[in-house]
Amino acid sequence: MLADRRFRDKTGSMVTGRVLFDEPMSMHTSMGVGGKADVLIFPDTIGELKKLISFFLEEEISFLPVGNCTNLIVRDGGYRGVLISLEALQRLEIRDENLSRESTGKEEYVGSVCVYAQAGVSFSGIVEFSVRESLSGMEFCAGIPGSVGGGLKMNAGAWGRELKDVVKSVSILDPGAKIREIERKKLPFEYRNLDLPEGAIITGAEFYLARGIRNEIRGKVADIIAARREKHPLTYRSAGSVFKNPPDSPAGKMIEEAGLRGLRVGDAEISGKHGNFIVNKGNAKAGDIIALIAAVQKRILNVRGIFLETELKIIGEEL
Ligand SMILES: Cc1cc2nc3c(=O)[nH]c(=O)nc-3n(C[C@H](O)[C@H](O)[C@H](O)COP(=O)(O)OP(=O)(O)OC[C@H]3O[C@@H](n4cnc5c(N)ncnc54)[C@H](O)[C@@H]3O)c2cc1C
Image 1: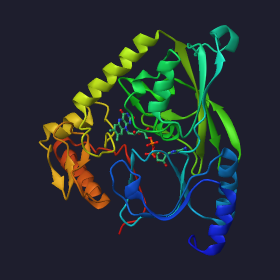
Image 2 (image 1 turned 60 degrees about the vertical axis):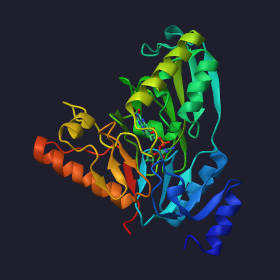
Image 3 (image 1 turned 120 degrees about the horizontal axis):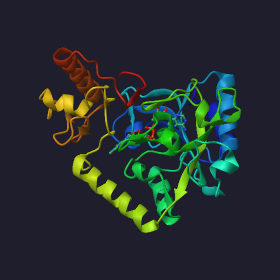
């Protein structure tokens, strides 16, 4: 149905951005794996996105938002429905300056500059902007390859900080195709997750940052990038940490202690550099990665009695 003329004409008239049919997701995921999505669509504006969602809901067409696909595995059989990339939503600006605790009346806001970013802005974009504008608070995001939308959905974090620590409010297109701006306090952030209703799409967010000294911020960012290069296997394709850290011990440490470094299924391999990374050594398939994940889960359950939950998201159909 999604490839038929009516769908093409209708969606084509709703967006000025690209509409790709039968698009191999291996071209888009950071892991370089994944079958074809029926449709991958790039709305240019929030208005276009709203029209699309209303249409998909009316026609009962499955859809899912994606960001930079850096925490995503699409199974080898592909995705039946429409994947919506918000890559074109790139607004990034300072909204309010010198909003003190007094002027907001909210104790928890300790920063003094409010920055708004649309969902498609990458972390590298926000971090560069922060350095340029001498704003401190986002340094921990340096080197995370995701987007604002995907990052908030994952409550991305590093070095003991998470996005929930710096976000003021999140704009969400809810399943009724209406946009609501929700304050952080009302958002159900969890470790590596923001619990949203099915079909909800993050369109942007406000962050509270603090004025700082540009060279100090730049230095901190450079240190973080250097530390990541040292710790992470960045010469191979990956999706970052595969498993969530259980409360008592980091997942990577458990995997290494269980002697699983180098374990391989096809071209998917547990990195020798970091136990919580699976790397694509060449031509891995999504199925290889998923089989390797299952093998690790089984082994850790046997030796430690702990089930390692995945951090990365797996979508789509088996071949
Ligand atoms: C080398 C490397 C290092 C990494 N390091 C870290 C790290 O230090 N810390 C960390 O937390 N993560 C890390 N990651 C993982 C990943 O970059 C983050 O989770 C990132 O936030 C995902 O963003 P994305 O835009 O790529 O989301 P995607 O992978 O595209 O999507 C992730 C999930 O979010 C949903 N989603 C995407 N956009 C939206 C939206 N607009 N509205 C609602 N839901 C949406 C998707 O449906 C999917 O379920 C790393 C990844 C790599 C490859």
